View 1 (cartoon, rainbow, N blue to C red):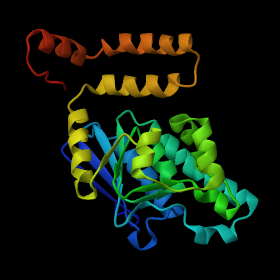
View 2 (view 1 turned 135 degrees about the vertical axis):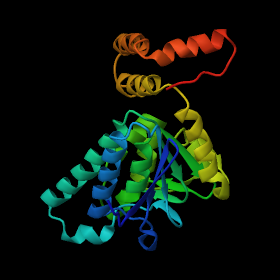
View 3 (view 1 turned 45 degrees about the horizontal axis):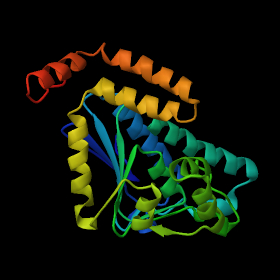
View 4 (view 1 turned 45 degrees about the vertical axis):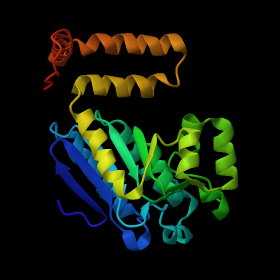
Length: 257
């Protein structure tokens, strides 16, 4: 299907979703949420795709929600719009494959929230992160208060959300929000390099790894380890597990399905 606010491409087993409203710094509007959801559905239904990369066209990853929408919102409409974004980000988190956010520029408000729903965040040196909603007398609406505190700790999340302060890529990495920082010109290629490496790993193991990490995080230790135990066993239902062990013992590179 044709898209107007995003670009979608597949190279080998890696797909790339590019936010494409550069004249609006890729600000989120209903059409973008809808097209993002459609792409995520397509990815989930295409077993050949093993990794998804998110990035932005132009100077921004996503500079936030499209503020032009806000003056028209009633409280009920605002809550509905918030729920649309939350549902799409849960849809992304539930993909059985790794998702990499390659943050090329501004990731503010909704942009930071989209990035935080990915499994890994890589950033260009010039990238900026923040939850500045407080400056509009608002709070984050797409999961920012909750995902940020889980990624960087409650104290730092409080400071960033209450002040609306913007941080650079170096501070984002030091806080644990960002995994790695690259020169802007190298960001996408470095992200693709990691994505291709992930695409060569066992699909079931990647899925189980995501599930255990995400679902176990908020549980008590014994319950979380029970999840790990079940997922470890399930990995052995996949021939890739036998291939991985055999390749290790035979001192060769594994050939996963």
